[in-house]
Image (cartoon, rainbow, N blue to C red; front, side, top):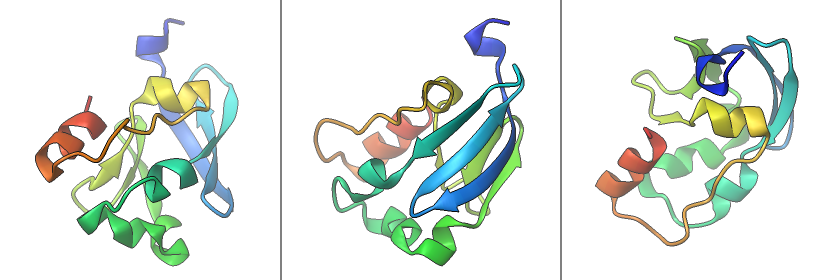
Length: 102
């Protein structure tokens, strides 16, 4: 199965900002979102630093997402690698959303 066809099929909260994710190729990875969430002040997205808010993710259309309108999501290939990229410098809100979406 090619990486571009892999989707998220299940996820469970582990601890802190770590989530265990199962993919459509039957692999499991633990992704640590803490470095991403705490690297910079993210304005609107800072609410996901609160553990109870962070834990409210869901699986939709083959990805793990946060928020009613997919406020926060990550490229599946990054999740599958188990490594979440941290942008090299603070971005504008628009550039940050573009970074998250692809």
